[in-house]
Image (cartoon, rainbow, N blue to C red; front, side, top):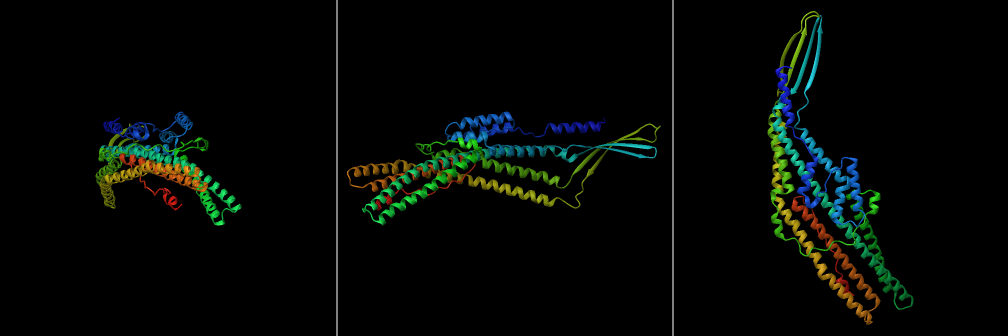
Length: 471
């Protein structure tokens, strides 16, 4: 082997030794460390039948009991095909980034020419010289893309967990509200039947009975809507958890939402969140660095390309003559005649400018978004706590007083049933307020790490004070 061939082999070997690589297990370990409060260290990719069987066994254990919110997150991370697909997609992106730094395989060509008695054999080894010269810059660019893929993996995990948390809250709240809607409908049905009997014996007129019958019809409608909402919320949770039909049939939810925390998260906790460590800021910075370095490399690669050919030629003038050998090289340069690369450079400049402004926009809006998320969280806690500490106790007191008045024959059974219905409506409104708090809590936790999730508060059902006053 000639010195030129040996030199080229050494250069290629050195280049391959410095190529970027991707270890998905290491990336998952980093995500589990950075987002431990979300993944609990459970984020993993199942690549073998044994691993998938282990995930199935873990899912079966979780489904054996009512599924709390932490268990719902574990179930999604352990068996959701959507989560597995997201991890595999991030792996593919990181592998593609690593591939961009690899040298193209060299081309070996063999040429055999015969003219009369003369035989000529030519062996050529071709590779992109410019690719080799720019390999360090392309390897550094690949590492930046892999780092961005790591941040994106963590952001995807946080987003998935936040969706599971919020969907679980909606499903449990809908199921809890459904139970109370059944109580309202049962009470309305009793009132309607009593009103029918009262009219039958001549104690009530048709108008009074119609009022009770109309309330029963409305309560029946509300019950049907509550059943549909509970079924829809449960189906959404099943889809997000990635359960099959058999697993969905085994899914059990708790009877009620968790209690409110005794005190809300203090506003001072927001100041502990360093701006530069947020996922959204890190991802925007990584994309800017990619664009900026790609632009620097593109200024050269868009204008010129060089290919090096190492050749060895053997010639036999005739069958009886000795072989004549020759060695050499050939350099090919692409001339910028038709395309000067100006459009490509303009596109890269625009991408860099867009990435720079996007980074600036993310940094400027991060603090404001976090404050807005906290304001929503705090308002949701205040409203839910108000229902828990003021509205519900007052409703219970009113029911107790009305029961005493009923026992003293100061009010009738219809007034007592009406009061019970109004108390249940207040409880349903309290459940709605509690649901909004836990959804806002999940959104705030995501915002603290830098994966904002919008949450809007809606007006809760009224407390029924107006109805009670009218009555």
